[in-house]
Amino acid sequence: MATSRTDPLTLEVVELIGTVVARYYEEYDEAAAAHSLTGAQARVLGLLSLEPMPMRRIAQKLKCEPSNVTGIVDRLETRGLVERRPDPADRRVKLAAPTELGARTAQQLRDSLTFAREPLAELSDEDRTMLRDLLRRMLGEPGPSAG
Amino acid sequence: MATSRTDPLTLEVVELIGTVVARYYEEYDEAAAAHSLTGAQARVLGLLSLEPMPMRRIAQKLKCEPSNVTGIVDRLETRGLVERRPDPADRRVKLAAPTELGARTAQQLRDSLTFAREPLAELSDEDRTMLRDLLRRMLGEPGPSAG
DNA sequence: TATTGTTATACTCTATAACTATA
DNA sequence: TATAGTTATAGAGTATAACAATA
Image 1 (cartoon, protein in one colour):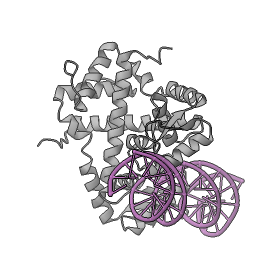
Image 2: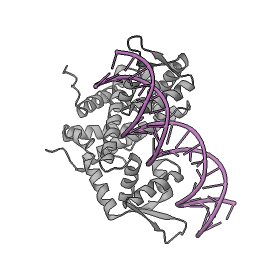
Image 3: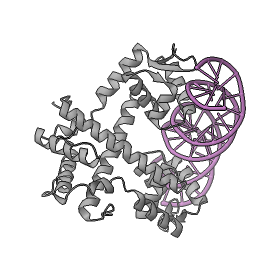
Image 4: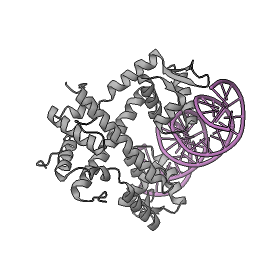
Protein backbone atom coordinates (compact mmCIF):
# COMPACT_ATOMS: atom_id res chain seq x y z
CA MET A 1 0.00 0.00 0.00
CA ALA A 2 1.07 3.54 -0.70
CA THR A 3 -0.29 5.01 2.51
CA SER A 4 2.86 6.55 3.92
CA ARG A 5 3.94 9.18 1.45
CA THR A 6 6.72 11.43 2.55
CA ASP A 7 7.07 13.76 -0.40
CA PRO A 8 7.43 17.47 0.46
CA LEU A 9 3.92 18.34 -0.74
CA THR A 10 2.28 15.70 1.45
CA LEU A 11 4.41 16.70 4.42
CA GLU A 12 3.45 20.33 4.01
CA VAL A 13 -0.23 19.47 3.90
CA VAL A 14 0.22 17.32 7.00
CA GLU A 15 1.87 20.23 8.78
CA LEU A 16 -0.88 22.63 7.69
CA ILE A 17 -3.50 20.26 9.04
CA GLY A 18 -1.55 20.10 12.30
CA THR A 19 -1.66 23.89 12.47
CA VAL A 20 -5.39 23.91 11.85
CA VAL A 21 -5.88 21.36 14.61
CA ALA A 22 -3.76 23.33 17.09
CA ARG A 23 -5.60 26.58 16.39
CA TYR A 24 -8.96 24.90 16.54
CA TYR A 25 -8.27 23.51 20.04
CA GLU A 26 -6.71 26.74 21.21
CA GLU A 27 -9.72 28.78 20.26
CA TYR A 28 -12.15 26.19 21.56
CA ASP A 29 -10.54 26.19 25.00
CA GLU A 30 -10.38 29.98 25.06
CA ALA A 31 -14.07 30.26 24.19
CA ALA A 32 -14.91 27.72 26.91
CA ALA A 33 -12.72 29.53 29.45
CA ALA A 34 -14.53 32.79 28.64
CA HIS A 35 -17.57 31.09 30.17
CA SER A 36 -15.51 29.53 32.99
CA LEU A 37 -15.97 26.11 31.41
CA THR A 38 -13.35 23.45 30.77
CA GLY A 39 -13.07 21.95 27.31
CA ALA A 40 -14.86 18.78 28.39
CA GLN A 41 -17.69 20.71 30.02
CA ALA A 42 -18.13 22.87 26.92
CA ARG A 43 -18.21 19.80 24.70
CA VAL A 44 -20.89 18.11 26.83
CA LEU A 45 -22.97 21.27 27.01
CA GLY A 46 -22.69 21.64 23.23
CA LEU A 47 -23.78 18.05 22.73
CA LEU A 48 -26.79 18.37 25.01
CA SER A 49 -27.85 21.64 23.42
CA LEU A 50 -28.38 19.72 20.19
CA GLU A 51 -30.28 16.92 21.87
CA PRO A 52 -30.78 15.73 25.46
CA MET A 53 -29.36 12.24 25.96
CA PRO A 54 -28.61 9.50 28.51
CA MET A 55 -25.36 9.69 30.46
CA ARG A 56 -24.06 6.62 28.70
CA ARG A 57 -24.51 8.10 25.27
CA ILE A 58 -22.59 11.20 26.29
CA ALA A 59 -19.70 8.89 27.19
CA GLN A 60 -19.90 7.26 23.77
CA LYS A 61 -19.84 10.65 22.05
CA LEU A 62 -16.87 11.77 24.13
CA LYS A 63 -15.14 8.40 23.76
CA CYS A 64 -14.56 8.17 27.47
CA GLU A 65 -15.77 5.97 30.31
CA PRO A 66 -19.30 6.55 31.64
CA SER A 67 -17.95 7.17 35.14
CA ASN A 68 -16.25 10.33 33.90
CA VAL A 69 -19.49 11.77 32.63
CA THR A 70 -20.98 11.67 36.11
CA GLY A 71 -18.47 14.25 37.32
CA ILE A 72 -18.67 16.48 34.28
CA VAL A 73 -22.47 16.61 34.39
CA ASP A 74 -22.31 17.09 38.19
CA ARG A 75 -20.26 20.25 37.70
CA LEU A 76 -22.51 21.53 34.92
CA GLU A 77 -25.54 20.80 37.09
CA THR A 78 -24.02 22.62 40.08
CA ARG A 79 -23.69 25.68 37.89
CA GLY A 80 -27.28 25.40 36.76
CA LEU A 81 -26.41 24.74 33.12
CA VAL A 82 -27.68 21.18 32.90
CA GLU A 83 -30.25 19.02 34.67
CA ARG A 84 -30.88 15.30 34.97
CA ARG A 85 -34.36 14.08 34.07
CA PRO A 86 -35.86 10.62 34.50
CA ASP A 87 -36.50 8.60 31.36
CA PRO A 88 -40.16 7.53 31.42
CA ALA A 89 -39.33 4.48 29.28
CA ASP A 90 -36.51 3.11 31.47
CA ARG A 91 -36.11 4.05 35.09
CA ARG A 92 -32.43 3.17 35.06
CA VAL A 93 -31.71 5.92 32.56
CA LYS A 94 -31.09 9.58 33.36
CA LEU A 95 -31.48 12.05 30.55
CA ALA A 96 -29.14 15.01 30.72
CA ALA A 97 -30.60 18.19 29.27
CA PRO A 98 -29.54 21.83 29.21
CA THR A 99 -31.45 24.32 31.33
CA GLU A 100 -32.54 27.57 29.76
CA LEU A 101 -29.32 29.17 30.99
CA GLY A 102 -27.36 26.22 29.62
CA ALA A 103 -28.97 26.55 26.22
CA ARG A 104 -28.16 30.26 26.13
CA THR A 105 -24.57 29.58 27.15
CA ALA A 106 -24.21 26.89 24.49
CA GLN A 107 -25.48 29.32 21.87
CA GLN A 108 -23.03 32.02 22.97
CA LEU A 109 -20.25 29.44 22.91
CA ARG A 110 -21.14 28.42 19.37
CA ASP A 111 -21.26 32.02 18.24
CA SER A 112 -17.83 32.73 19.66
CA LEU A 113 -16.21 29.79 17.85
CA THR A 114 -15.16 31.89 14.94
CA PHE A 115 -11.92 30.08 14.19
CA ALA A 116 -13.26 27.85 11.47
CA ARG A 117 -15.71 30.42 10.14
CA GLU A 118 -13.55 33.51 10.11
CA PRO A 119 -10.66 32.24 8.01
CA LEU A 120 -13.18 30.70 5.63
CA ALA A 121 -14.37 34.20 4.87
CA GLU A 122 -11.08 34.63 3.04
CA LEU A 123 -12.21 32.05 0.53
CA SER A 124 -14.69 32.46 -2.30
CA ASP A 125 -17.72 30.21 -2.62
CA GLU A 126 -15.87 28.27 -5.29
CA ASP A 127 -12.88 27.83 -2.98
CA ARG A 128 -15.09 26.65 -0.15
CA THR A 129 -16.74 24.12 -2.42
CA MET A 130 -13.33 22.77 -3.46
CA LEU A 131 -12.22 22.61 0.14
CA ARG A 132 -15.42 20.84 1.13
CA ASP A 133 -14.98 18.22 -1.60
CA LEU A 134 -11.33 17.64 -0.78
CA LEU A 135 -12.05 17.24 2.93
CA ARG A 136 -14.96 14.92 2.19
CA ARG A 137 -12.74 12.68 0.11
CA MET A 138 -9.97 12.83 2.69
CA LEU A 139 -12.42 11.67 5.31
CA GLY A 140 -13.73 8.92 3.10
CA GLU A 141 -17.22 10.39 3.05
CA PRO A 142 -19.57 9.97 0.13
CA GLY A 143 -18.88 12.56 -2.55
CA PRO A 144 -21.26 15.36 -3.58
CA SER A 145 -23.10 13.10 -6.01
CA ALA A 146 -23.38 10.01 -3.82
CA GLY A 147 -25.50 9.27 -0.73
CA MET B 1 -17.29 42.62 8.88
CA ALA B 2 -18.41 39.47 7.13
CA THR B 3 -16.56 37.06 9.37
CA SER B 4 -19.46 35.02 10.72
CA ARG B 5 -21.01 33.34 7.73
CA THR B 6 -23.63 30.77 8.46
CA ASP B 7 -24.54 29.55 4.98
CA PRO B 8 -24.86 25.76 4.62
CA LEU B 9 -21.63 25.42 2.64
CA THR B 10 -19.57 27.24 5.28
CA LEU B 11 -21.20 25.26 8.06
CA GLU B 12 -20.43 21.99 6.31
CA VAL B 13 -16.79 22.94 5.88
CA VAL B 14 -16.65 23.91 9.55
CA GLU B 15 -18.07 20.54 10.48
CA LEU B 16 -15.63 18.71 8.22
CA ILE B 17 -12.74 20.55 9.82
CA GLY B 18 -14.11 19.55 13.21
CA THR B 19 -14.09 15.93 12.07
CA VAL B 20 -10.50 16.23 10.88
CA VAL B 21 -9.51 17.71 14.23
CA ALA B 22 -11.24 14.95 16.17
CA ARG B 23 -9.63 12.19 14.11
CA TYR B 24 -6.24 13.81 14.36
CA TYR B 25 -6.36 13.88 18.16
CA GLU B 26 -7.79 10.40 18.34
CA GLU B 27 -5.01 8.93 16.30
CA TYR B 28 -2.37 10.97 18.09
CA ASP B 29 -3.48 9.68 21.49
CA GLU B 30 -3.69 6.12 20.19
CA ALA B 31 -0.18 6.31 18.80
CA ALA B 32 1.05 7.72 22.11
CA ALA B 33 -0.80 5.05 24.09
CA ALA B 34 0.84 2.36 21.95
CA HIS B 35 4.08 3.49 23.59
CA SER B 36 2.42 3.88 27.00
CA LEU B 37 2.71 7.63 26.73
CA THR B 38 0.05 10.26 27.40
CA GLY B 39 -0.63 12.89 24.78
CA ALA B 40 1.30 15.53 26.70
CA GLN B 41 4.30 13.24 27.17
CA ALA B 42 4.32 12.36 23.48
CA ARG B 43 4.17 16.01 22.54
CA VAL B 44 7.10 16.92 24.78
CA LEU B 45 9.15 13.97 23.55
CA GLY B 46 8.40 14.97 19.97
CA LEU B 47 9.46 18.54 20.66
CA LEU B 48 12.72 17.53 22.31
CA SER B 49 13.53 15.08 19.53
CA LEU B 50 13.68 18.05 17.17
CA GLU B 51 15.82 20.12 19.51
CA PRO B 52 16.77 19.95 23.21
CA MET B 53 15.48 22.97 25.10
CA PRO B 54 15.08 24.60 28.53
CA MET B 55 12.11 23.62 30.65
CA ARG B 56 10.64 27.09 30.31
CA ARG B 57 10.66 26.93 26.55
CA ILE B 58 8.81 23.62 26.58
CA ALA B 59 6.09 25.35 28.59
CA GLN B 60 5.89 28.12 26.00
CA LYS B 61 5.56 25.58 23.20
CA LEU B 62 2.86 23.68 25.06
CA LYS B 63 1.15 26.90 26.13
CA CYS B 64 1.03 25.78 29.73
CA GLU B 65 2.62 26.86 33.02
CA PRO B 66 6.28 25.95 33.59
CA SER B 67 5.37 24.10 36.78
CA ASN B 68 3.49 21.52 34.71
CA VAL B 69 6.52 20.73 32.62
CA THR B 70 8.42 19.61 35.71
CA GLY B 71 6.07 16.69 36.20
CA ILE B 72 5.84 15.69 32.54
CA VAL B 73 9.63 15.66 32.14
CA ASP B 74 9.93 13.85 35.48
CA ARG B 75 7.81 11.00 34.11
CA LEU B 76 9.69 10.88 30.84
CA GLU B 77 12.96 10.89 32.75
CA THR B 78 11.82 8.07 35.05
CA ARG B 79 11.19 5.99 31.94
CA GLY B 80 14.62 6.77 30.55
CA LEU B 81 13.29 8.67 27.54
CA VAL B 82 14.56 12.12 28.47
CA GLU B 83 17.35 13.58 30.58
CA ARG B 84 18.06 16.96 32.15
CA ARG B 85 21.42 18.53 31.34
CA PRO B 86 23.00 21.66 32.78
CA ASP B 87 23.26 24.69 30.53
CA PRO B 88 26.91 25.80 30.54
CA ALA B 89 25.85 29.36 29.72
CA ASP B 90 23.34 29.78 32.58
CA ARG B 91 23.39 27.62 35.67
CA ARG B 92 19.73 28.32 36.40
CA VAL B 93 18.68 26.60 33.19
CA LYS B 94 18.14 22.86 32.71
CA LEU B 95 18.16 21.59 29.17
CA ALA B 96 15.81 18.67 28.55
CA ALA B 97 17.04 16.30 25.86
CA PRO B 98 15.92 12.89 24.61
CA THR B 99 18.05 9.87 25.44
CA GLU B 100 18.92 7.45 22.67
CA LEU B 101 15.86 5.40 23.62
CA GLY B 102 13.77 8.56 23.66
CA ALA B 103 14.95 9.53 20.18
CA ARG B 104 14.07 6.07 18.84
CA THR B 105 10.65 6.23 20.49
CA ALA B 106 9.98 9.67 19.04
CA GLN B 107 10.87 8.40 15.58
CA GLN B 108 8.54 5.41 15.93
CA LEU B 109 5.82 7.73 17.13
CA ARG B 110 6.25 9.98 14.13
CA ASP B 111 6.17 7.01 11.76
CA SER B 112 2.93 5.74 13.26
CA LEU B 113 1.10 9.03 12.84
CA THR B 114 -0.43 8.03 9.56
CA PHE B 115 -3.72 9.86 9.99
CA ALA B 116 -2.84 12.90 7.98
CA ARG B 117 -0.72 10.98 5.47
CA GLU B 118 -2.98 8.01 4.80
CA PRO B 119 -6.14 9.82 3.74
CA LEU B 120 -4.03 12.14 1.64
CA ALA B 121 -3.08 9.13 -0.45
CA GLU B 122 -6.65 9.23 -1.74
CA LEU B 123 -5.89 12.55 -3.38
CA SER B 124 -3.92 13.18 -6.54
CA ASP B 125 -0.92 15.49 -6.59
CA GLU B 126 -3.12 18.14 -8.11
CA ASP B 127 -5.71 17.69 -5.35
CA ARG B 128 -3.03 17.93 -2.69
CA THR B 129 -1.71 21.13 -4.21
CA MET B 130 -5.18 22.63 -4.17
CA LEU B 131 -5.70 21.55 -0.60
CA ARG B 132 -2.34 22.99 0.40
CA ASP B 133 -3.13 26.35 -1.17
CA LEU B 134 -6.59 26.51 0.38
CA LEU B 135 -5.25 25.67 3.84
CA ARG B 136 -2.44 28.18 3.45
CA ARG B 137 -4.92 30.91 2.64
CA MET B 138 -7.21 29.82 5.44
CA LEU B 139 -4.33 30.10 7.86
CA GLY B 140 -3.31 33.46 6.51
CA GLU B 141 0.08 32.18 5.38
CA PRO B 142 1.90 33.66 2.43
CA GLY B 143 0.66 32.12 -0.78
CA PRO B 144 2.76 30.03 -3.17
CA SER B 145 4.03 33.09 -5.02
CA ALA B 146 4.65 35.34 -2.03
CA GLY B 147 7.77 35.45 0.19
C1' DT C 1 15.73 42.69 41.55
C1' DA C 2 14.53 39.49 37.97
C1' DT C 3 14.56 34.84 36.15
C1' DT C 4 14.70 29.51 36.11
C1' DG C 5 13.09 25.62 37.80
C1' DT C 6 10.86 23.38 41.55
C1' DT C 7 7.52 22.35 45.24
C1' DA C 8 2.94 22.53 47.40
C1' DT C 9 -1.86 22.75 46.68
C1' DA C 10 -6.26 22.20 44.64
C1' DC C 11 -9.21 21.08 40.74
C1' DT C 12 -10.46 18.56 36.55
C1' DC C 13 -10.22 14.66 33.49
C1' DT C 14 -9.19 9.95 32.95
C1' DA C 15 -9.58 4.61 33.50
C1' DT C 16 -10.64 0.70 36.51
C1' DA C 17 -13.33 -1.78 39.64
C1' DA C 18 -17.12 -2.39 42.69
C1' DC C 19 -21.74 -1.01 43.90
C1' DT C 20 -27.08 0.09 43.51
C1' DA C 21 -31.21 0.17 41.06
C1' DT C 22 -33.57 -1.40 37.35
C1' DA C 23 -34.45 -4.37 33.30
C1' DT D 1 -28.17 -12.05 34.17
C1' DA D 2 -27.35 -7.81 31.98
C1' DT D 3 -27.50 -2.78 31.79
C1' DA D 4 -27.50 2.39 33.50
C1' DG D 5 -25.53 5.28 36.49
C1' DT D 6 -22.78 6.07 40.50
C1' DT D 7 -19.00 5.81 43.82
C1' DA D 8 -14.21 4.99 45.19
C1' DT D 9 -9.62 5.18 43.90
C1' DA D 10 -5.43 6.41 41.70
C1' DG D 11 -2.73 8.72 38.08
C1' DA D 12 -2.06 12.59 35.02
C1' DG D 13 -2.53 17.47 33.43
C1' DT D 14 -3.58 22.11 34.77
C1' DA D 15 -3.13 26.87 37.21
C1' DT D 16 -1.65 29.48 41.26
C1' DA D 17 1.46 30.79 44.72
C1' DA D 18 5.68 30.46 47.22
C1' DC D 19 10.48 28.98 47.28
C1' DA D 20 15.79 28.20 46.28
C1' DA D 21 19.49 29.00 43.21
C1' DT D 22 21.40 31.90 40.00
C1' DA D 23 21.65 35.98 37.05
